Image 1: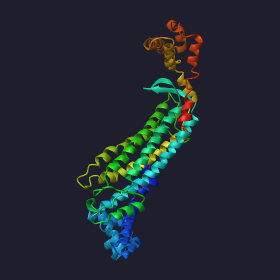
Image 2: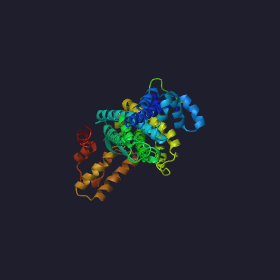
Image 3: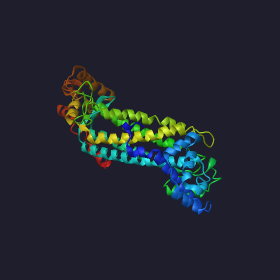
Image 4: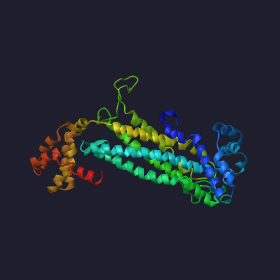
Length: 430
């Protein structure tokens, strides 16, 4: 991942240094349990734990000759261990180390992503409660519909991100897997108790049947969950972009004192953070299809998934982490303009009351079809001629025969239109 979107805390997890450190810990735990079971000498396990170290540069140099990163790693570490190195990587195969290490890296990343997501959820809840009664127009198809509150709009995202948190928790369980089962997964050269021991020490779960690799449906689930999360991030970002349009301007990203919106137009205040999240979300979702295709490996294993994961896993993890941190910044610093919301609400002269007026006509005895027709006639006259809706309604003789003036005024004022907002917050947003 390019430095622009790369936080050091995530970058470190996917560094070669950390990967080889995890490999070494796995190898030490394998030797430790093998010694306890009497498979290898206890001295060998002690030597491996005490002397095992590596040089990233040396491993990279050796790999140029071996064309195999695990063999290069084994050869490098063995040099430091000495005589006992013959019991290093004893009875296991490359995928035992690579896949279990991959699980740990994904888990380490996912836990940071989870914390970031939790912070976004908290910020959404605070903003939602703050703007519980901030009235604005609701829109469907981008067109004015009926009034809502900005807090209610935010609460929709609050619950969506809570669902994402539940999905992520399940995905973390899916990828927190240890597989130390030897060539083709038969445990022919490695005692099954070793897998359980290593899993427990590393706070992972033992794979049920691993073939020679951890089945990639687990990883596909994880990256699919990140794809859904990315779509939720983009949905929020697109909402901000739409509400920040000049002619709408109901909310706005924070614009710092020295920030510049354009190289040529000094007046510009663009929603660049939300636009950035839209783009990154597209990139995160791009990992879903390759992760699904990685499920399909030949027989007990091949390495067609390997190149994909080496590129995809670090970059998608880094991009997701960055997106959530940026999203939380947007939420916390969001500027809200209630006056503009009220102005936009009244832009169409009260047309957002059509549903309630239609319902009142039905209560008075009209069929739904006739009530709809009467209200629509007045609404279209208001829309086409830029009139005030209440005045057009008062001039409608068929409507006036059924609804009294004071009833009409009460509906138009919308005194009780959002009466159930309190119920929603009391029962849902606790």
